[in-house]
Image 1 (cartoon, rainbow, N blue to C red):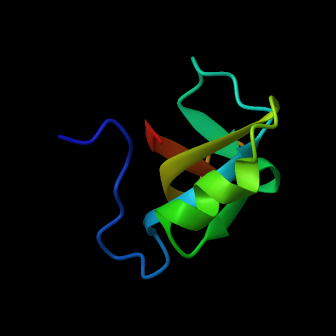
Image 2 (cartoon, one colour; image 1 turned 180 degrees about the horizontal axis):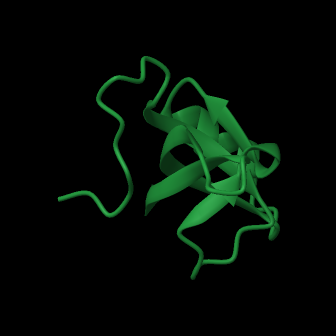
Length: 78
């Protein structure tokens, strides 16, 4: 069961590996400007490189929020 909105008609929403800047572990969604999608789990983990303000994750999106921002939903931290 997902905890985020899924738009079945959208061709751009998908699960992706990503690096998130300035992650707060209690957040469940992140603005597009904080998220960099990458090819695979290994690349996401290597890009964080132990930097405290970066986190590797699996995200779903982008979606448009009610404020008109494009956001990604956290699926899980890596």
